[in-house]
Amino acid sequence: ARFLLWFYALEEDGSFSYRRAVLRRMKGWGKDPFGAVLCAIEFLGPCRFGGWAEDGSPIAVDNPAAWIQTVGVAKDQTKNTMTLFPGLFTRAAREVYDVDVAQTIIYAYGGARRIEAITSSPDTSEGNRPTFVLQNETHHWTPANRGLEVERANARNLAKARDGSARALSITNAHKPGEGSVAEVDYRTQLDIAAGRTRSGGLLYDSLEA
Image (tube, rainbow, N blue to C red):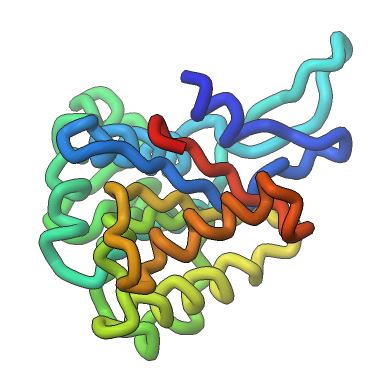
């Protein structure tokens, strides 16, 4: 609950406090179910800032152009998340939102919104305009499998959102030191931010070991 609240924290101008987030937990903690629910919220739920209420609280609205991607450098990395969606959307929800659940892609409102699994190279993913990206198992995203290039392509795609509302969440186990994985880069960035060695902000890092 704490992580979820911080992930949707807002600045005074209504923009998100964090553009990227990392949830690092041990194997079996439930990162994929958590990530799948977050994808579903971004897909259909009230997940965007819609102004301030009279009492000063933020008004949440849905995103009519939701384009959600679950990304991995191997097919099995996205399968763990995608197989959870059929059980998340009730029959009533499917009827109300016109949800069509397939194996690698899910549509709503007649195709106006989508959740899709991406396991392609950074060359083919370049140019997309996702509104939310779930990066699966980034401790396996290494230079050897072009994982760092995939992460950079995702970052460029998300940066196309002019209001800064398109964001990424990485779910990962502890990285193996020395592999140079995306998870290791994020971990070192978090340490630098905490120590004041860099002024880079916008990264929400949550780990029981951190």
